[in-house]
Length: 231
View 1 (cartoon, helix red, strand yellow):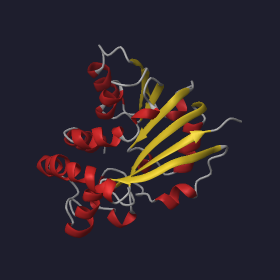
View 2 (cartoon, rainbow, N blue to C red):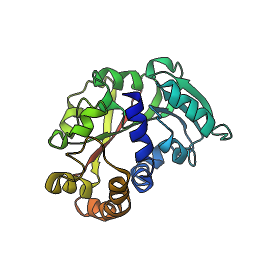
View 3 (cartoon, rainbow, N blue to C red):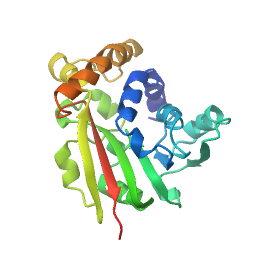
């Protein structure tokens, strides 16, 4: 499974437009902040985050990926620490947590959210990005260990303690339409690089405008911003 996920992370590393687009929707929450990224993978999001954050701690459960992160960021002064573990192994507090494309891999997702909220300073923010809509659940989701895809109502059902959702919106409406109507990628358990390239370089620029036109009410991914309130 690790080898398979590693190959897919490497394939999706070419999706630069998508990552920049997603992070552009939340950059104000991590700019000049002490940030931790949970589930850093091979560091594709991390590289972009370091351009605006004050400092970044990377948390990744796979030791091989951690070795790659160590090599990739050995000269990046924004990277404070690389932890081979999970949110349970962090042991300090942050202004912002980036939790992108991770929650869907965790069976007890509500517990994971609570664990992350406990790592936040008061008024800090948990930034979550997950694949959306179970109607789009595919062989690919199953192969890489996704338990589910999410809708807004799922997050309203979570117990968040004294924290609250301050923003929630969908992105990549063009990708959603492709999945829904043309079955692009969805019947494949192993999307090829050229398919990812086409989606990233042609569909994402269209989504940039279409999402705005549709008021972010539909999309292949869901972004959720949760703020930790004072006790």
